[in-house]
Length: 71
Image 1 (cartoon, rainbow, N blue to C red):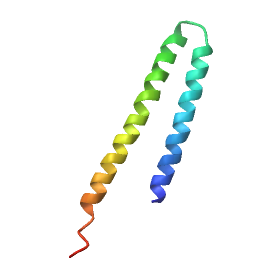
Image 2 (image 1 turned 90 degrees about the vertical axis):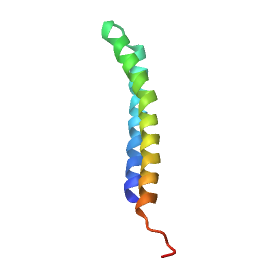
Image 3 (image 1 turned 90 degrees about the horizontal axis):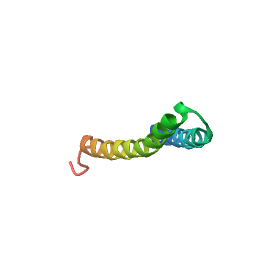
Image 4 (image 1 turned 180 degrees about the vertical axis):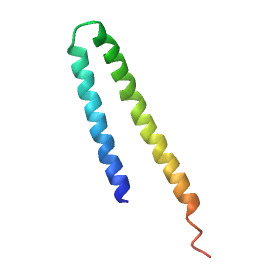
């Protein structure tokens, strides 16, 4: 249970950092700013999906490893 809490906090910190970087990149000027902004938006969408998929796979694997309690 402790590893899940650590991963959840890391995910929150990562998402906040991505939102902040998106804001900073949107206020920047220059050629590189547009590319950085698009990359930041893409990461803001992709990372939560990966976290969700990881959680689903973790639940599936955890349930598969646990033996039935009736035995």
